[in-house]
Every structure is written in structure tokens, then in C-alpha cells.
Amino acid sequence: MSSSASIGIIDIGSNSIRLVIYEINAHGAYRVVSEHKDSARLSERIASDGILHSKDIISIVPILSHYALLCKVHEVQTIRAVATAAIRNAANSAEIVRILQEQTGLHIEVLSGTEEARYGYLGVINTIDIRDGLIIDIGGGSTEVTLLRNRKLLHSVSFPFGAVNTTRQFMKNGNLTEQEMGDIRRMVEDAILAHPWIASSPNLPMIGLGGTIRTLGKISQKRSKYSLQLAHNYTLKPGELRDFLLLLSSMPLEKRKKVDGLSKDRADIMVPGLIIMDTIFEAAGSSACIISGSGLRDGLFYETSDPKHPIKEDVLEASIHNLLLLHPNAAVKHVSHVDKFAMQLYHTLNVPPELDDRSQKYLHTAALLHRIGASVHYYHYLKHTQYMMTGAHIDGLSHREIVICSFIATYKTKNRSQQQVLAYKDLLMESDAALIVKLGTLLKLAMALDHSETQPVQELQITQTESTLTLKLLCIHNPIMELKELAAISKDFEKIWGLKLKTQAGVFSKK
Image 1 (cartoon, rainbow, N blue to C red):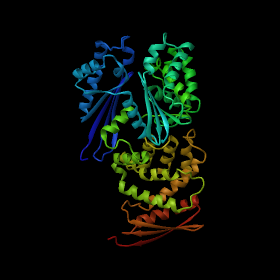
Image 2: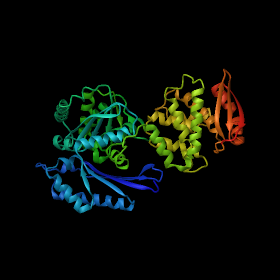
Image 3: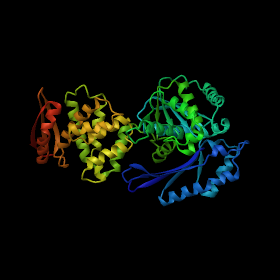
Image 4: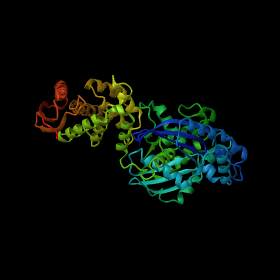
């Protein structure tokens, strides 16, 4: 790709209308550069005869026209504007689309329930490292449930109820009575009966999409003073879904509006949405609830940007690769060299028991991303790297693993690491401090082997005895800076790994 490109995704949902603009750089790496949201409550405006009347159709024209203008300002080459349940289920769906297209100049696709579920699946499967699970997407006018097995979409269904139209149908005075809550639950249970695969897949994690579920994650993080400012791939604590449902349903509407993390424009529809979610969670016998920040719009982007290969084979590798290409100052040749040596050292050394079975992935991730902070400022780039790694989606890693990798990538000393770990004690396990120190020291050793960033060391031969680690460096030019750095870190390495470091260097011509 010779130049950058942009893709705009407009999602005309039943509760809100959103625009997300993705930029794809000359290297093929992508990022979100603009996002906008406006409340529409289309499901609420559908008349009893199933029609969305002209004044309600026209009311969203200014929003869509503004989004079209934003796409023009951002020089977006491709726009995908899609409509979901409210317009899909309206009796005059074709008329709505015709009026909106005439008034805004946008081409609007009305997604079927099956298509909506598939795009949600694409958003999840490309950003969370999960093989089996149940995806639930609670929108304003529909709820999609998808069964995921071995990373493949096995079953999906779109139910014609969501947070907005359920609120409208059952809630009379801003609060639900016990009777009304029971009626919603029975409606959902009856719908599930026609799809036995939902109840026949117990003990799988539920991955939740949509505003109701994202809001639940925000409330949970605010309540627990969660240490990581990251919503995607957040896991609710056991029992939290039911606890928050009971808490919010017991509050009058005005008090609910003051709950930290719950926006005022969602306060009235939150409880019906949670009842839908809790009923499906219980019927499915789900083991946990994971919040996904990626869904329909992301799935549309993946298909639009790469229609032949919309599914990434390896979530973590794709995410690391994307981050590297977003930050060209990361010096890809250098970090790839460091990663090669880090992996060689890891596989040669007798790995101690405190390093868990995913520790190789942690070291690999840290080795490749340790220099991305240089794109902010070269001086003190490790500080910027730590902030960027904990703030970015490193898809394929849990929140705990993201923090661990960020500390390995920016490791300096054992004492400093122990202090850093304290800030994330709600996320990290006691054994993680030792893991970070071990792998951080190993990464420093790999970095020392290309300290000059000129790749003088082409091959590394490693010999380990009970007390010594001998490195034989086969080089294409004089590794003077590498030998100096290896000498500087040898004492720390010996303290942490209990091995005396010995180095031998030989220069040869590479033909």
C-alpha cells in the first residue's frame, strides 16, 4: 500500500447512531482516528402499527449528514452505513432507507439478524483470544446470541427484543415492578426454548457486546477502583451481573442516573437490558462474563478492509504486528533481532517453575514492543512504552497479561519492578513480581546483544552449566557496544538467574 486510506463505518442502531473512522497507513496498519455517537432511540419511535413516521425519519437526517461531512473532512474513501433492528423490523423499512439515502447521499445497508450476529462475531474473534464461548449482543431493538466453537461461528440467532423496545413494552413509570421484571424474564426464556443449542453449551464464557454490557463493565470498574483504564476484555467478578441487576432495579430512576459509570441517557433502559443478559447467562450456564469493546462496527471494518481474509489467524501476533507498523520508530529490524535472541535464550535456559506456561508469549510480546515509546519521544522512551502498552489494545492478552508484558518490556531493576507491581495489586498475582524480574532480566540480556541496533551478532551459541551461561557471538562486524553492555548487566543477570555470564565473540564475513 503506497499511501494511507480511511474507512468510515456508520452504525444506525436502535438506540444510538455512531460513526467510527479508521485510518490505514502506508504499511497497512490501522487505528481509529475519530468516533462520534448520538442518541436516536429509534426503537422507541416505532408506532403501534410498526411504522417509523416521516418526522422521526427526518429527525436523524442532520446526524447522518453531519457524519457524511466528517467523512469528507477526513478524506474517507470508503463508507459503510448500516441499519440494524429498528429499521430492519419497521413495516416501512424500504421507505425509511429511500428517504435517508435521498436526504444524506449515503448508501444504507439494512443488515439481517444473521449478518448482524456475524459482524459481532468478527469483532470478537479478531480481538479476544478465545476458542469457545457464547457471544451476546444486546442492542436497542434486538439481541443476537452466537455460539463460538474452535473460533468458528456454529450457531446464531437474532431475537426481536433489546434494551429500548423492551423498556417501552414493559416499563410503565420509569421503574419496573416485580411483575414486569418477571414478564421480561419469561419472554426471554420462551425465546431461548426455540434454540436448544443455547442451553446445551454450559460452562462457556459469555462475551458481551453492546451499550448495556459495556456500561455494566464501566460501573464495575468504577466501583472497584480498577487500576487499568481499559474496557475491552474486562472480566466481571463472579456474581457481579446479578448483584448489579438487583442493585439498579431497586433504585428509583433519578438515583440510578447518579450511579458512577452509568450515563443519564441509559439509566432508564439499563435494567431491562440487564434482565435480558442475566436470563441468557443463567439459561446458558455461562462460566464468566467478558466485556468486549469490539463488535459490529469492528467486524464491518475487518470485512471492508480485507474481504478475502476478514479473520486473523493469530490474534496476538496480528495485534503486535499492527502496533509495530503504527509506530515506525519502533525499529522493526532491531526489535525482531532482540526477539530472536530472547526466544533462543528462553528455550535454552532451564526455565524455573515460577514462569507459567504463557511466559514465552509475555517475553515475545515485550521484546517486540519494548521500543514503541520512541514514537512519542526517544529520551525516556521506556516510560512512554509502558504507558502505551497498558493503554493500547494488545489483543490476545488478558488485562493482567498486558500489565505483565508492559513491565517486562520496560524492566530496569528488581526494586523498581516491585514498586510498579504495587500499583496493580488488584490485577496481579503474588508470583507475578518474580516472573517480571526473571523475564525482564532476560530481555535486557537480549537487548544487549543488539545494543548498537546494527545487528553485528548474526548467530548466538549458548552453553549452560550449573553455574555458568556462556554466550558465543558470531558477528559480521565488531560488537564493541554489545560487549560493553553485556559486561554492564552481567552482575544483575547473575543475581537474578544464579548464573555467571561469560561471552566470547568472533567476527566472520557474511557472504
